[in-house]
Length: 564
Image (cartoon, rainbow, N blue to C red; front, side, top):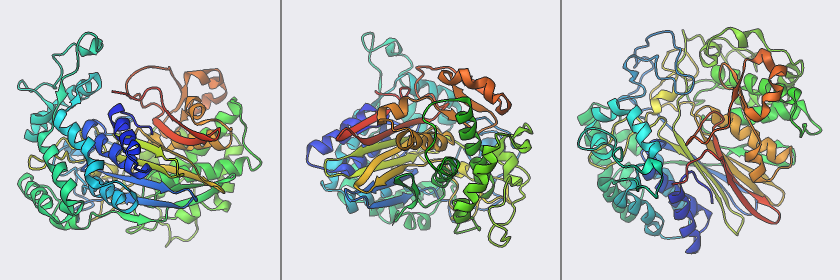
């Protein structure tokens, strides 16, 4: 059982100790995360869960982000040149309206998704699984240095909303916990608890009534009243359509395993594409030892996959998306051959952010069928966002669970429903706010999220569950964890200890332990990132996993992940 917060881990372990299975543990932990991690996620957000049983059968519980039915392609005014923060991308929509405030929120799906997953695959009573989250809301989570720092950074937006101000700020309009000396350590002082009594009441009611309460019941009506009062686009119709889908996941064969990802638009297709290119690059097995050549091939595989991501991917229910072609043997072979030339395509070096450049310029055409995959011509693009948590667990019966859920940005949209205590997300930021792209906004459309949980299965059942938080950098991190496990034969712990790269943005990020190879990839604009103990450092995302090892299980989490 592994999660970024100790309180989430304790909730999961409590379920296992009471005879629950991995789904009970994962749902309990994910519910607690939705209470104690407002800087990363919310129970009114979105996410994905993969469940694998002892026979290697996998199901995907999909409660990914959706736009309101009243959303439209041109609902935001674009300003500037589309360039934005290298991680968050907050600057190209006027007033940051796709990030902050009432128009930024997508359909709230997390609580319904988690409870439906528990009803379908869990074992313990619903109230038992929800009790840790109810207590966490009643008793409060610690206002530690990470919370105070993020609340200070988002102070203006938290002050602007009465609900968020009442929960997260003190009477002076400053972050709760700012007057404590707990930043120096617990022996000096303890953090102030951030209590959420209205959310506790909502969760207590859900423990009695189930997920239907937020899709069509009294809690749904309370949300609709807030939507109307705040001028939000969301409606009762959106809530009625918010129940999760339980699907067979998308998967591909990788080495001696099969890698499973969610079906809805997210990080999974790009993770699979990176793995497909890597496998075609080294059909007999890839190099285990680090070298400049290995880093270059991996970086180019990632850059080519991200170029395709930024141009071609969107909601296939709304636009033609050539997923099968992107994951085909023939196309992966073409990209592997291009990566093998070890040269950098000119379009990688024009100085623009790749999500902007490739939204309007296709690096490759995976198909010649123009009706199947048109070339998109938006004027520019808006950048991806961040703010996510991930939980993995397994049980003695061979079940594995990988669940990622998110608020899409720190403190979501900064708007908290006073009637339910639920913090609204900023899922609209995942769309390209510029019309004319594959990932542009549409009524009820699904944006291209960053979340990318995976399960790996083999002939004897599920082998590992993995995922990460950290915005667009999730994708490369998860792909490298899979490569470390299956190509390099590493244990789960060593798979996370191994230094990673990130090639999703304009530069190639190299962990300092790879600095000796920087001169061999100098044309990829390498940036050496020093090892640090900062809370939630996201240069290479924040991954965790559970896998089989030495006849048992081993869990691991990136060293930078928090533990309070």
